Every structure is written in structure tokens, then in C-alpha cells.
Amino acid sequence: MAIKDKINILQDVNGYLGAGIFTPQGEMLEGVADVSGIHFEASGSQVHDTLLNAQKMATEAGFGSADMIQIDTEMGIVFCKCYNDGDLHFHTVLVIKNDGNIAMAKMKMKKFVSEVKTEF
Image 1: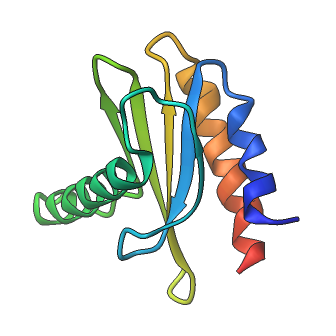
Image 2: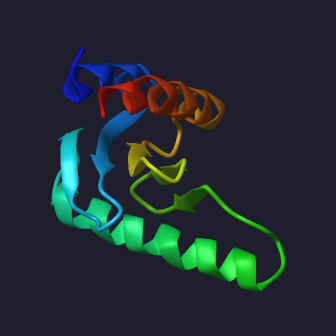
């Protein structure tokens, strides 16, 4: 099954607005979004950069490694999760409405990452 088909896992989250998978350099490999007024590919790349900054800050502050961030905005909640096993590295971005199911979003992101890593 292709990565695009696996994004359906994330589309099942209550409040889903969009999702994409990005390279470690911030380039979108695949994505599906219906977020009015937002260029998802560009915004996903910016969220990707925010994750990189958060990972650096968490390590430097002594919290240890970080593999996920959550950004609460007026429009919705943005998640970015990193998968990096040394050989394979990608970031998943998910956007849900503010009243969406946060717990389900996190669970589905873990499932998505587990299934999509086999596509590389």
C-alpha cells in the first residue's frame, strides 16, 4: 500500500483537517489537506522546522530527546512527529480542529508511523 493510501489512518481522527509526511529537509513527500487559506506544503515545512528547534531545545535544556510537538492555534491543533531509526528519517504533520480528539490523534500518528516506515 502506498504512503498516500496510509494517510487514511490519520483522516479517521475526529476533527481532521490535513496530514503530510516530510523528509528531514522539510520537503513534503505526500499530503492531503483541506485547510482553507493555508498552503499545506509550505506550512508543513515550517512546522517541521519548529520540531527541529524543539528537539534541540529539549536536549540542551536537559529534558532529553523529543520526537513530537503539539502547537495549539486559533485555527486548530498541529502535531509533528519525528521517526528516526538512524537509517530511516521522516516527519509526520497532522492538523485537527480545536475540538478534535487529541488522544486519538496521537494514537493514530503512532500507528501511521509504524505502518508507513515499511514503505521506504
